[in-house]
Length: 407
Image 1 (cartoon, rainbow, N blue to C red):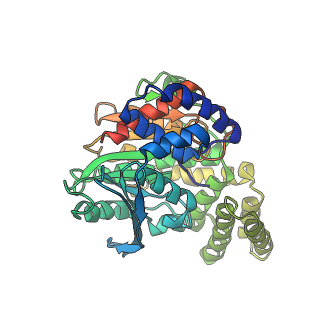
Image 2: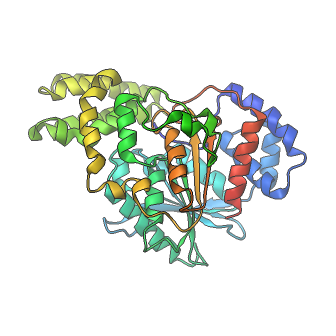
């Protein structure tokens, strides 16, 4: 599973067309730029597409090249808009095997480039292996150091930073580090987290830590009154098991169990684009589980069966023990120095991998420490949500993206 840009059901798209036509007649150019981006991201047809095409700029997608980091070179690609670059955005994908080649990431980069942003996509190798580690934050920091020093990308020595899913929270951590905090024009966390240990607790238990009723009263996040709790997605629990495999099974079983979980997560990723290939890998992983020794066999069976209710309780005490892990400040925005530039937090209200409560809690934590803007939206999601958007939601999302256009 992967945080994408704006994911809309067919019913939602139809309602959105009507809403956009209502407001589109009297929007100023900055709002039209934001509106055009939303239309492109949602792939809306008809009159909205005409509006988007009117405001769009041509761009080129350049060849993949390497960016140096302390953990080695990582692949990158630049999307270059025609004319003057509004600002270069360093776009970091979340937990996904395909990295910068992931189809929805490519679509988001193209939509941003068509709005006039230069977009540099860079993938952290550990996230491509479904692992959330302090090294990911180091890669983000090193990528900003490199990009901000390139005059063609950052004439003023600054870039925007946009992290998706777990890259969102890690991008905020990186943006506050002394080496780059003067070189980050803004940082946007798209469906990200404030505290990784808190997210792992949710994925294992279904419980969101924090005062839910108080969170609904937050004035730091637009739409906070809609924050809620949803059963966690099985994909997220599998990621937790992969991260904790060496703490759950004997040392001589870690590699084999990790290969099985990796295969399941690969199949889950394939399911978004190639159902036939995904089903084949899922079947292979079921056969693979039978060949494993205990306790790996049982754990892998729980993964294949998507048995969150059985796997979660096994992992919960181990996950909760990580709250004091020495590497947690590199993995959690609430435990790190805040960025100097604006912090923008965007989250799908029904997200069941990283709950939207994370954006509310993080916004409250940053209040008074950073310039923070937050939005919970029913128009974006993690696992697909079948919700018809209201005109208010459309307007809120346009206002949010307009703020990014001004950075």
